[in-house]
Image (cartoon, rainbow, N blue to C red; front, side):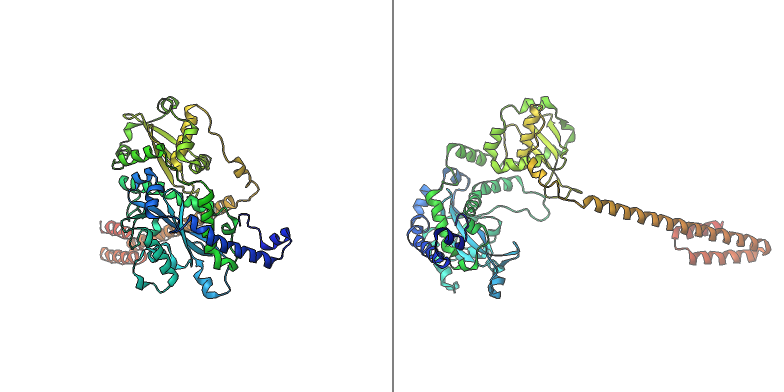
Length: 491
């Protein structure tokens, strides 16, 4: 399963037929489900007191006191079914592919508690509804015996006061247990408030363990690739077996040590602090452009190893990609009254187009670090600027791999520019021709008027002026021109 080798190839290696390999595989999965799985996951392996005292790190209890476990779902891609009803129910519009969903519960130290599913992936089987079926304690609502069995097992372990940690997909869940979920930006707002952002940081800092757990499970090529529909009846048993193997032979995803506890306590002490930097931004006179000496004086106590330790490997990798993203034109500023506070403006986002990119402003403090890749990129850049060194170009190979890939963007832009110029040129020519025709008509009218005025009496002249005014009014659409002509003739 780890290598994803087909049964036909396996049979060739061992000199067995494909049906015999399939039979051995089915027997192995069944035996491991009966012997190995109950020892390492499920209600037989974990009891509530054991979960609270032995599988809940102290630093997590500081951040989220009542939390006992994390919940989330993952996808296993499958082939299309020849049964059209099953094909429609297994098609996920979000992923635009056929798949089944697996709901997982992970304890706070990174051990898998249990796996539920597989579930269909249509609109009736989203994260919210799946969790509601598991957390609802009303027996009469369950028409499916398997759904009730999963729910009954869960209710036997956890009490009503326990809380679970979920992502945005579980915000509207209603059931027996309350949930810690990240806050969302309200309508009309551009970012979270400081307190909400700090609370969301506490949740995501703990919840990232289940995402890393799914990533480690997907290293088994059997579930990391498209699964044959023949294995769907046993895919739940296979997932539970892999989780049992993960608990038994792999290291914990969450470590409990003094450093993590100190950082959690520091976060809780400062969780109610307001963001004073927002008020600093409004006064532009208190900021000055930073030079090398300014950066060297305030950034003296950390290097790239510290950045990697506190921000994580993934954040550092994305930070280096930001440093080489198109042509970054950053501006660095230092606050005059608070020299340890600075900002870097015009960090171009990787998600927007090059024509009109979104630009970020990154703030930093000499006593604080950050896990955001934008902040990490700023810290890495400041290290090189402090030492007056050029920022190295990372991922040169990634850029070189696309050297022979053609890009039609210059052609499209030049084509659009040429069409635009031709349009404006044609418009200006038409306008000039219209103007010359209007001037010729006006001069002809003036000549006729002069001839008529010399031959007519004063009374007839007034009538001709009135007639001429009426003609001009009917032919001219510009109200200002009509008013000017009327005042001139009246005078």
